[in-house]
View 1 (cartoon, one colour):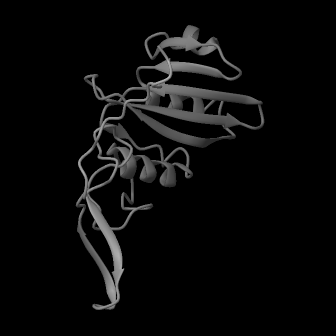
View 2 (cartoon, rainbow, N blue to C red):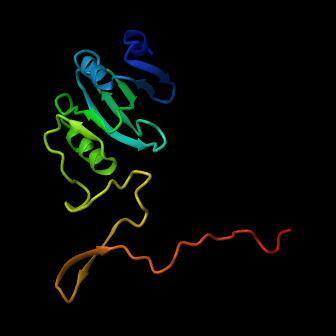
View 3 (tube, rainbow, N blue to C red):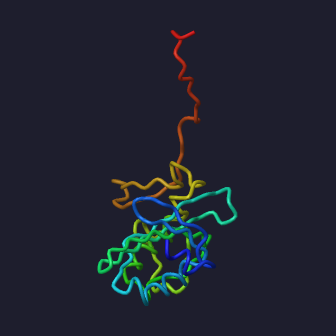
Length: 172
């Protein structure tokens, strides 16, 4: 792809798929440069993250940018860890995407105008899409008829976790 040739210090590799995926080392600088030229009429269509707990930079982010005037769809893969620079100044749609990634994975976006809860309540603690977040969560929320309000309490499992043997007794 042309990006790997034009910006060799910013790109680490190109993955061939139905759309072009570029592994980048400096995604914000690359998108800022491309916004002034190739992606002038482009927009950020999606931003998501994946959690890899065993790595030193455990969260990998993916930006999907589309230029509708040039017919270019670009998938950038970056590994900023738990801190990244906000793209709100380039793409206004990044406000909601960055809020969701911050809330679900704990990635802080420097320069974001409004990082606050979007999908969970304001008293929520933890990041639900991280691999070390418990499946049952930390709190149980329910409406109390006696108190006439929503109450929260710690999750209490009535039964220990069991392992099951799925082998059939009829097989040798």
